[in-house]
Image (cartoon, rainbow, N blue to C red; front, top):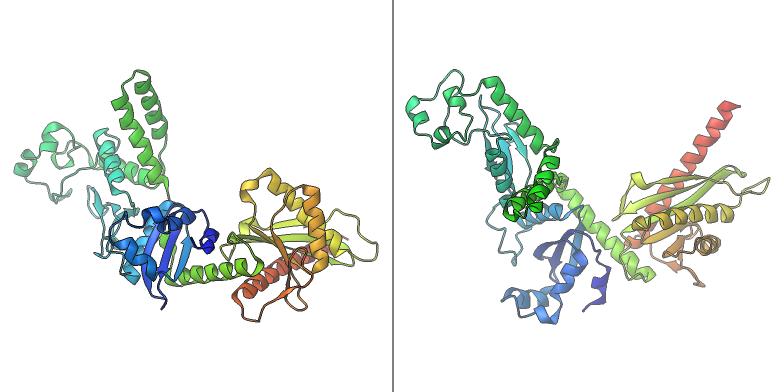
Length: 438
């Protein structure tokens, strides 16, 4: 197995397989990108999946990927990319079939809830998409039968001004069995029916109210009575609710963003190769300091996820260490900033970065080593010297010098410049505040 596959992240996403010419030949989705792609190269699976896998493997020259926030996002993005690029080995998805939406027909006096694969903007209310349509169908059927929001299931056209013919009403099985509120027959007022419509719309929009608590209680009640079939009904309902809760943000992707994601992946792969990382540095945190002759000394950290800024994770530190009276100490400030961040990581290791970048050279490497020793934790780190754009690794005698335009160097310079900007901005803010207070 190619060791380069080990750098794939263990997160949900879409993998894109290309041949030597760069043509996309297969697109797939995964809950765990690393584990899924590795399965293709396991000898035990080579001849167990028909003709496709043995034919596909010899053609794969490159694998790109795009990480997603959830498996559901990956499902929807996979469908979008398959439709756009029509890979040869993706026999499924070429028929133009799309994931369904739930639609409330707001253009009618008495709206209906229908499952549709066609979205017409500006008309009706749409919710979704829902990759697992069977789950959604079961949930809607449950809500209807339980009278939570029993919107009419028929397709008859009628309104307050145009009543439905009595003959059609009398032939409706839902009317005779009482399964429908029957606005056509005047069994429910226009206002009361609209209350049901509003309740359904709010439910589909994620406002579940106390219904989950009631269903959970009923599930436990039937389970305690060993009525497992009845308990399973409510369990399935709660699972469907969880499916409805997931928000598809991948629909916001635009073609240029997909292209950017692929380019960022290439940069991260190149960076991992240059500095010898076995894991892709998808989460990078960078540190820099700023001060004016030791006054208003600050340390700052910026965060990049998959090559993009993650502003919510930026951090600022007012330097507490004692500095020389007539000047600062970048060494001391860097050690303090990194140490304080490392203490946060020890408390919450789930958010540890894959790589730390320092703005500076050998002295900053030494400062970071001190911080790691004090915190009793280690994370791969490097430094980028602004004077000659050399990349310093711990213990290395010389820096790594990449040519201008190298994808890895471009990424490091962007991150370094961003943390420098962030640190200078914070320092100036404190300095200006101090001037006004005086």
